[in-house]
Image (cartoon, rainbow, N blue to C red; front, top):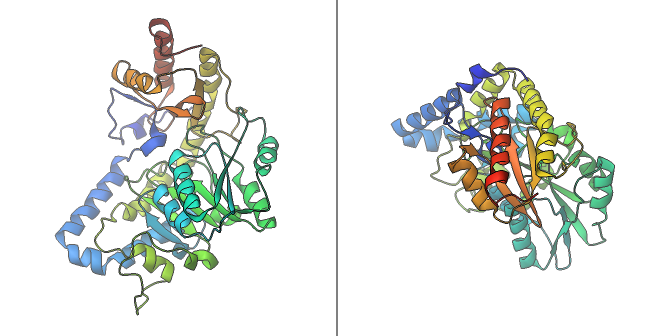
Length: 391
């Protein structure tokens, strides 16, 4: 992996902590944070003009930059605080009848599982968490298992592009293509995708997609987007009914007015998108991501050998980006997480998922082999001195 020591200086992260948890909330580098603070100060100097007058133009400029970056029309995007907010918009409004089914996997993010279960229960529909075997042997095997969950009652597909606890890249392009042939709505959770792996909305052809910009795109927290295919946009009501509803003067489109015009809110994080893209381009972030993913993959087998477990997939870029989840055996995941932070100064999630527990490390420009060696040595010590790890 190339040395990115110059980029490491751009991040505010505590140098005493090995930060291996970028996947949870991201981390914002100085040039983007400075733009964020400049925008906040501009808002406070003239709040009425900033919020009531300049907002439409500023948000349009930001959406245009994001649309160009991910390959879609700017007016097919609305900004939201996080992907969970976006998915609540969709799950609440989607037309499901009693007995209808939404097909998903048993690898999805917990907040999304809860969202779909809540709204399906309200409507008498079923949220199907199709079982996927771990380790995943191949793309073909994954697709075979996934489609076993299809029934005549299936109305929509909900799936992660990159999973949270297992850190797996799933074959969503193939799923979207096959779903189209079956007449099914496709809804994709891409929280971990923008800025992480190459991505183009036009080629993916998902009907609905949500992604976080405050993770791998490096923006300030609370900056995410919801994409909805143009012909479907009027199907979805806003979570917050405000000035955009029933407005005799449609300022943009119903989709944008409904979901964007919500009175007083600090949308300055959304406006940092052009600066974030500029930063990514200037620092050749696609290569940074490739190098970071290579470092993550090259250490994965080593950690699994230490834990006497197996990687969750083949060690290729087909399934893995800049995150790897190590299957571990522990009955006290929260205690292990706290111990790794407080004693060994390592920030890393320890995540239960069904019967499994995963230790997931994320690698970005500020990380190097020393961080992973520090984690390895800590796990060796914990195995020898405590009962928190079982092998």
